[in-house]
Amino acid sequence: MIRAADTLFARLFGGALLAIVLAHLLAFVWFTHYGPPPPPRQEPAAQQQEANTPRPRPPLLGGPVVPFVFQLITLVVAAWYGAKALSRPVQRLSEAAERLSENLDSPPLEITGPREARQAAQTFNLMQERIREQLQQRARMLAAVSHDLRTPLARLKLRVEQIDDTRLHAQMSQDLNDMIGMIDATLSYFNQNRQNEAMQPFDVQALIESLAENAQDNGDAVTYEGTCRPLKTQPMALRSCLHNLIDNALRYAGSAHVELLDEPTGVGIAVIDHGPGIDPQFHETVFEPFYRLEGSRNRNSGGVGMGMTIAREAARRMGGDLQLGQTPGGGLTARLSLPRA
Image 1 (cartoon, rainbow, N blue to C red):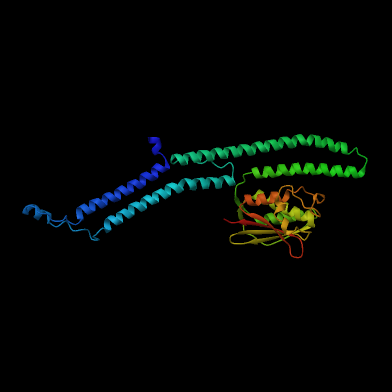
Image 2 (cartoon, rainbow, N blue to C red):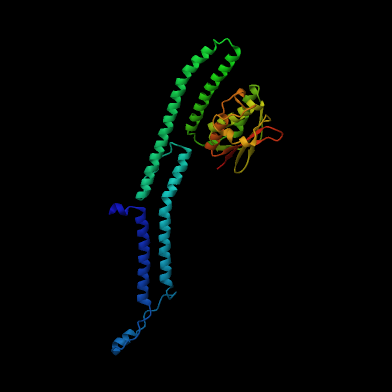
């Protein structure tokens, strides 16, 4: 019986029932004390005189206003209590789900409240633990597979060097390099997604200047413009995102221009190139892992089709987004938006 009462239904029903009983009890007392006298009957003179004795004068408001107001107050309190009891577990689950989306290692949900809320919290914590275990297992499996694949790939590269046919040698070397690059890119993608980097104030402008100057030191044509106040973000994720965007522009266009726009609600970063560009119908498709367009943007240009995927995943881990657009006059513009909140 005690366990049955420790439920959300029992709490809501009990609160509503108590409010109704109290409201009706006060109405009964009020009308008994202040209500109109009963109709006169043929009784002895003393009893008739007592019956005709006027009742106490009602309060200042008079009439049924007092019991009505009390009933309204008790029912409003009961409704508020019920809404609070219903919304509190849902709010806790929502906050825990948001924390989980940002960090798989976030603290488990506290197991408190009525039985339904405790059961939901236990289920949520179990789900979080299973997701964490599955990701760890997948990472271990990928690491093991990549390690096992490197050995035969290394042997194949040695054997390819013994091929006298120049054309066949070049084709097989390219395929082997692509396979090794895909393995490295896949591991890099999963390793970055597993990182739980904390948000911290960071000088975005200094990072862009550093990336541009490093590229210029290597002989690459990378320019930048704009200023920006420090932004609370994930420095490593931002560096990874911008590095992939600039590298993508250099690979396919030979140059890159970075524009920095500081706004009250966030920061916008545009990486602009004047290369062959991408048809608008493929602007979302290129974010899929290992997707490469035919023509100038293919494997012969370098890369395995993971750069844009890693860049968008990094942008969304920071709470922002990455979209592609066409550059006026030809080319591709990657626009990274990061919120200040």
